[in-house]
Length: 232
Image 1 (tube, helix red, strand yellow):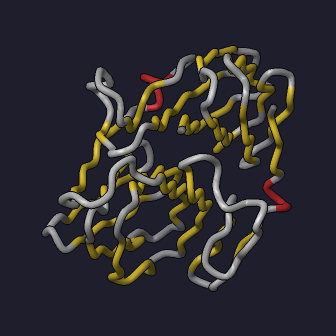
Image 2 (image 1 turned 135 degrees about the vertical axis):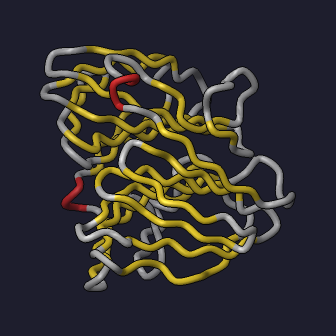
């Protein structure tokens, strides 16, 4: 089963400095039919104005993956981490028993990103933060695991969840496959471009909520950049 969730039908908010679209219930947007997809709890599509951002705030019991699409985001947290993550790089924060952090766009252009929250498999634990570059050229024609809670995904950033976050870039007409497996929840969003996934057309920044599909067969209808979450 693949349910297309059109971008223009997503919930959202315009705070001036922040324009946000919510694939699932978040903040003041509430839809009881869209509380998450398996252990995937949040997928926000954010545009942050130059020289603005999220002031210091707390998190706990959540794995938070940021996929920067354009511009850069500057992170600071209560563990003392400070750093700038630009498009093509991925930061991951395991909130664990509790952490405070801030995220700012210190650039002169808007920053666009996906913020993805996944519920951890086990609660508590020490919080942590990490970031890593994932060049788009390395993802050409295939999915590359960006963050993972599975042993063996050594090149990915670690998360404390039975889940993977993956990225791929496909040229128009190019195809890729992903083995999702039974009892898994997939959520796929083209950051750029449009695709067919198992025959269902998914446009730019649409969501595809996937269940009971063992194999995902994806064809790019135009040059595309994809982000996929595979979760319990």
